[in-house]
Image (cartoon, rainbow, N blue to C red; front, side, top):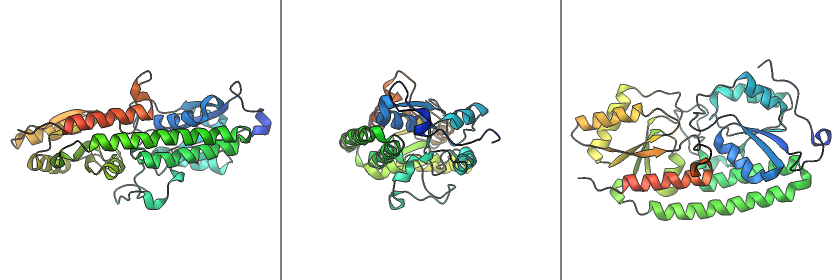
Length: 303
């Protein structure tokens, strides 16, 4: 916290923004970094703090992270307490004049899912509904336009382009998800990150852990979920790339003890994108991969 200093350089002080002199942007999660890169293009140099497989709920900023943020022109984070251990840093930097923006600020509260079990009461995982991620894209576009007025039209056009891509993604995903048999339309994952996905695509969603992975699952949680899976004969459960699979594996063993063999349907990308160089390293690629994995796992016939 002692490293949090004065505000970022203004446009007039750092020169005209160009591909040779881009805006210095720091983004917290890989999802936010991808969103800003999609819209900012060559006019932004985005530094992401959290790489593939990193859990933002538990992430603690290093001195190097704080140093990066103090030198940035803009800082984008998800917000709604997703980066729970960094909230104080964002507040301190904002109070000192830094340009700090939560991408979830573009979503109306009426569109959000409430949770009594999560700090702040609202589910922060809005990216699992492409319609809401489109709102975040517009917010990023407007923020970049306000910072770099010379290229404002470019940022707004890119936000609109990406929004159209998200519309197409939603339509494709809806068609794919509709193929899952009615009795199998239950998505069980390591933690409760897929609420917006379930609402968007008519799925019941259950997570072993709550909305935040800071809340560890206990023996009773494992037992209750195992009883539900066994009695409902759900064909598959899913692990997540940024969370240890041990919890879901414990549920599977408990289900087997009840006489039913549930499968691990695959790995979903929850709070982080995939590794660089893979299709899942982009938001669209991640979303498509998740849909394909869910459809495959839940379309199996239960014996």
